[in-house]
Length: 196
Image (tube, rainbow, N blue to C red):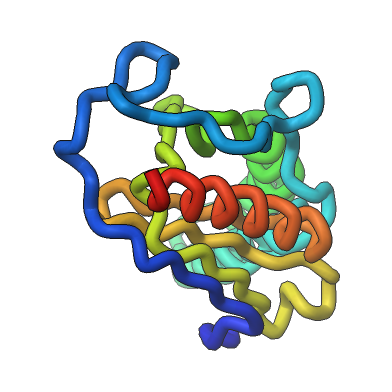
């Protein structure tokens, strides 16, 4: 994949990690609200459905490798009856095809994000559900990246960098216009918070 960003924006915001503790869902002490930047109706939004193709291609590559391995093992197991040697790769291929369809769909259904007045909220994860919030005042850079396959599908990845790499976040499959809107909203709010 092409790792070079097509568009990068940064905010020269100092790290104000200890400038006041955030209350549950509330603004930090001394925080002056800027212009509203919330998602429509404050609801969580989904990624572009085009990202499903990207994820299915990735899963298909893994599945193909597993099926090839099953065929090799089946061919090498000369002590087994022919029916068993054929059945193993067929069963593995069937399971692999089901996973190629189901896992990306389930992952897509679990990916949600929203931009609020306080920051960016992200929810994702199949087995382990992860929920993160990045306050606007911690944002340092917002990058929009397009890899080779992403360009073909017409989607981009949006990466939000903070002072601590542990709190960085990525939205992996957005329409370019939506990514640019989010980038502008987050940067405008981060700059407004920086001026406080």
